[in-house]
Every structure is written in C-alpha cells, then in structure tokens.
Amino acid sequence: MSQSAATQALRQNITRENHFLPVCYQESFTNAEGELCVQFLDKDSPIPLHPRVVGKINDFYTRTIDGVDDDKIERFFGEFVEGEYSSVAKRIKAHKNEFVLRREDIPILLKFVATQIVRTLAHRLCVDEQAGIEVPQGVFIHNMHRKMKLITHSWSCNCPDIILWTTLPYLGSQYITGDNPVVCFSTNDGPNVQTFLPPVHKIIDLNESLKSSFNGFIVPLSPYICLQVVNSHRGRVTIKPPQPKDPREVREFNQLIYNQSVQFVAAREAEFLRFHTKK
Image (cartoon, rainbow, N blue to C red):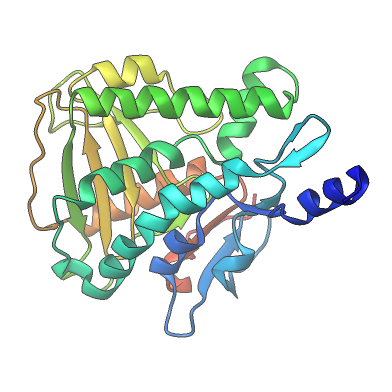
C-alpha cells in the first residue's frame, strides 16, 4: 500500500462526529419516541430531536499527529467512559426513583462526572476566554487531560460521598439537562448550605474545589434522578436510595443548568422548558 493510500485509510477511520454530550447520557431524557425536546438558546421554541444529532461538533477532539488525523480521544470516551456508563444509564431510565445504586456503579459514575466537567463546548470557550485567544487544539486537549487526571486522582485518594435525589413522587417536577450539565457547588458553612459557583464563563479552580470537604458537583442523570458528588474526604461511600427533592429546589437547579449552558437545554417534555427566554 502506498503512503498516500495508507494515509487515506487512516483518515477514513476518523469519527467526525464527536459528541461532547454523550448519546447514552441524552437517551435517559428521551420520550417514548426516542426523542428529547431541545431548546436552542437563540430560538423561540423547543424541537424534538434524536440524541445522535444533539451535542456534537465535528472533529472536537481530533488531533493531527505527524500530518495524520488521530481520533483516539473520541474512541477513549466511547470505550472507557460511555461504554460502561450506558448500562447504568439504562437502569436509571427504567427504574426511575426505584433505581438502586450498586457499589460497582460508583467508579463508573465518578468517571462520567470527571470527564463531563471538562469535555464540553462550554469548557472550551472558558479556556479560550482565559487565554484571550482561540487556543490551538493541542492546548485544549492537554488542558482537558490534565483536569480529568486531577479529579480522578483526588477521588481515588479520597472517595467522595454519592447522593442521589429524585423528583418523584412530584409528577409536575422534572430535571432538565443542557450542553454543560455538571454544576459545581462550594460552601464553607457545612454540608447543608450550598453556594453554587458562577456559571460560564468562568473556569472552576479544581485545586481549590477538590481540597474542600464540602465542595462537589451535581449533575442530572434523568428527568427523575440527580447525582450529587461531595468531596467528603472521609474515604467512604454512602449508598442510599434516591431522596425526594422539593420541586422548588428542582426548579432552581434547572435554572442553574440553563444559565451555564451555551447552546441548548433539553428535557423529556417541552413544558419544563417554558421558562426559556430567547438569548
């Protein structure tokens, strides 16, 4: 095979569609038709879309190595993050507030959160904003890798507490999601008082956040289940059934997701996106 033919073969193996919001994650928010209601922030009304066409950017993680496109980062996310998370996501969607967290789910969920904090378009925009320029692809990828490594190392040394919240039995309350679904919280006043950090555009100081025993992250996993990770520094995991969350707090959390999203928010049902004001 000639060098040009070999290069062409390598290029054909590239997955152009890089999902910064994993399809398996989005599927937990889909309706009976397999679609989710997507509200683009610059549009007036939500539209039903299949997860395959939402939250993707061509070549978002693609690198060029020795003149050849390389897609190992997208394959890494697909095999080692989403491949494991998808089975948990299916149980979350099927069982709703009766979802039972298994001990083997813990590292899968933590790996999902750690990667989702830094693999979004919102984070890329933050990196550009801090640098004052559109940074080269290699700089963004290095930044993403460094922060994922920082988070996973911290949690491997001190396993955080895992808390699950549910919107049920309140039928008129559901979680929404968005293109930047992980909310960071920080407090110096104890575990029961949360102060959410400012939304995008602001890069989270992970070193500062991870060292405090009352800081952490919250991410909706379905319309009915939300995951809270607390840097407890106690080296143990507390597994409890999902606890009901007051609908007012759910609405406040949905507003936070909306505020820090940069392209779109999404929900199982359009009625939970009615608060949208065209940006």
